[in-house]
Image (cartoon, rainbow, N blue to C red; front, side, top):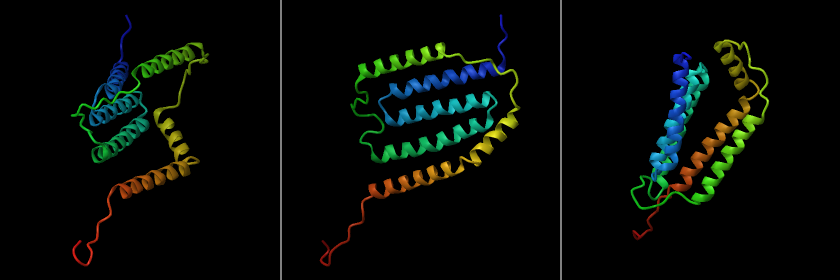
Length: 177
């Protein structure tokens, strides 16, 4: 019988939590609960990265998803007719086609995984600190302009969305009308 390590336990635990909350995203009729389930699923993925000793990616995943899901939840509450799912609105559409697409996608993915020659297993990898340094160099080196441009674009889109959604104040005429 193989001895399960603590790291293997947490990788399995957080992987199952991520899958469970991922399923919950599609099982609820509330956009708010769906957003929270997606947040918890992505946070579990961040914890999965932490369990695999990829600290930078884990913390980055958790920070990004917390911010993203918070913004999404705020916009849903502001603009959706029934963000709490208290009405009788059915949020599932084209159920048969969705199930078929999911099954076909899963079968294709598993087929690709089984048919691909993955090469030899790496016998030695750089230490976690060296991997983090190399990733930081990549992100802050040649990819920095891409991230900066994307950040400014997203901020501009958020400001524009709020500006369009907020009604302009109405001025009263000279006679109060």
